Amino acid sequence: MQIAVLLYDRFTALDAVGPFDTLGRLDGAETVFVSERSGPVRTDNGSLALVADKALGEVTRPDIVVVPGGPHPEVEMANPAVLDWLRAVDATTTWTTSVCTGSLLLAAAGLLDGRRAAGHWLFLDRLPRFGAEPTGERVVFDGKYVTAAGVSAGIDMGLTLLGRIAGDEYAQTVQLMTEYDPQPPYDAGSPAKAPAELVARLRAVSPL
Image (cartoon, rainbow, N blue to C red; front, side, top):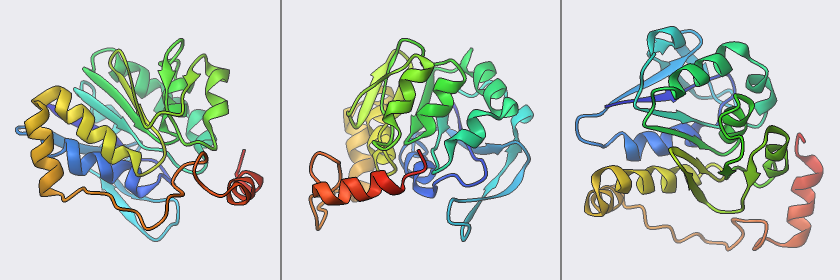
């Protein structure tokens, strides 16, 4: 099984690394980071880079595709190389997945038309423009498409999909090995729970 994690300029690190560190523990799986060009690709803050092992044209039939998000998804949503690659590999994937605003890339490629999808809460209202039905859920399965809410939800997505592929006990083992036992110091991880003034402030400065 080959798992292809798409990288592009200014992606969000945890969007890619969360699924990598959960799905990537599947026995016998090969995880490959892929981008338009092989080499280092900078994250959204510019201070970290992950290395793309292969260019898009070198990865043609992955079993699982993971599309991370970033703060400016509109750039890759207008990138024919990325959208064409997503359409091409989706024809043979077993699972096509995304984290955060990565669902907007899938939607822009025409892959989520008529499907329910998750994404970062600040960007959910963009999904209907591409025929997708936005939800406030953390992980959404619709056929072979698995979309996750913002950033940290990629860990949940990876574990949930791992359970579908390898069974609950295997996924629980990975959860235990990674000691994924969230106990956040604040209960402000969603717009429904966070203080209203904080939600309003973030909406005001979002790149929408």
